[in-house]
Length: 102
Image (cartoon, rainbow, N blue to C red; front, top):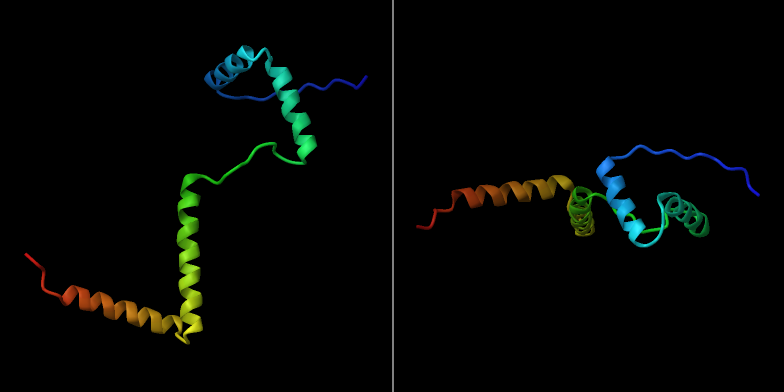
């Protein structure tokens, strides 16, 4: 038999009660659920479920990818960052000088 070890974790009481109610409906107590989590962690060699970045990080990634793609296209066309900035500035000036439609 293996030596026993005590594992303690602090968490929100409502979270614990909600999770305990789900496990109880499945016929599993919290200790068994935690043991299952640990055993599955050993089986897969990591967290036993998919983890994702927070929503703000997910929104930023597509922007970063588009920015990198635009930078690569500009470099392939022979444009420098200064050329791109100058073109953007010229477009902004042209847009501001257009008459406003009524």
